[in-house]
Length: 228
Ligand code: ADP
Ligand code: ADP
Image 1 (tube, helix red, strand yellow):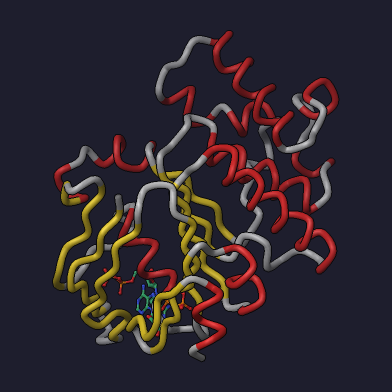
Image 2: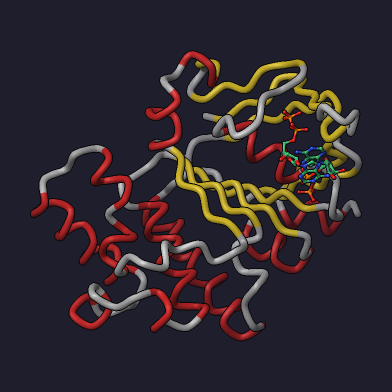
């Protein structure tokens, strides 16, 4: 589904962010990338949806180089959730969720039905939340909407970059449980970045341990615990 083949990234200021990284992620797999700040996790994510370009090597999605895709087609098919709660502040919750479906020119009726379905899935009553502004929601509720917005147009891949780091511990644990449950329901390929080992082990089918731009271990949580 997603493949990194011998990928290196050197930023224009000379920073070596990734060194000869190779990784295959299967369809429907939930992979967590863990490692200290600066080890290249975010760079790896940004290479998947072409927010940055590799210096060497290639990234493939469904056996096709990411450069072979139309950039909009590529990004519409990849949901992206970031740490900073990034709902558009002047749009209602429904308008936020509809951004990509609108760009894809879905019918209004379809968009409305999809929005209701997603809010239900997020445990937020559509009749209450559709017309609210982001500022009227708690941090945890906003991040739930952020996840649903990323899923709105039914992408194959969901990239999550420390999505819960800004939340309080209780909300965070709740959202961790929810995302795991959601994954079992919708079977998306998920790449989840964290620097919290507890979170990486709790969520990942496979945990990729990164250090200085390399993957030093990539194993299911059980195996990682046995071979630290
Ligand atoms: P590229 O080599 O991929 O073109 P650039 O070096 O041009 O990337 O940087 C892209 C953006 O990232 C710039 O706006 C730059 O200010 C910002 N940036 C530079 N250094 C860092 C850093 N260490 N961490 C995060 N962002 C940075
Ligand atoms: P992580 O997500 O693991 O914290 P990053 O991928 O953000 O790591 O960064 C890897 C390395 O590349 C760090 O040294 C960081 O400062 C540097 N870096 C990230 N973005 C840029 C940029 N745009 N320009 C220059 N250096 C960058």
